[in-house]
Image (cartoon, rainbow, N blue to C red; front, side):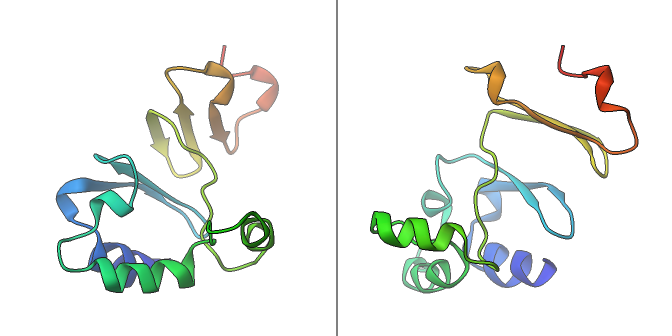
Amino acid sequence: MLVFMYDVIDKHIDRRKYCLVEMDTDSLYIALSTNTLDDAVKPGMQESWAKVKGEVFPRVDTTENMMYDRRTPGLFKTEWSGHGFIGLNAKTYFCFNENDSTKSKYSSKGINRRLNLTK
């Protein structure tokens, strides 16, 4: 995960346009000041980004490729997208979407889920 962070994200994305929120062994949460990662690419790095992007993210050019890559291991997929993130510590966080509260996501490792923290 650190190799991806430094060799892909940090190399191609302008640091003023993103902030690492949380990283785990199999997940990475980044806050962006732009709408997409493509909008945050450093000037002059678009060609290199296009090549790397095709190697580490699922293809979105055709429906067939999207469906195939969705199940391909090793590619970084968008698991959640929204407006905010509250992180208390590792594996204890709450992600929310201002427009739709049903699209919230949370992890509460070590806390009983029956407590329903989202209400």
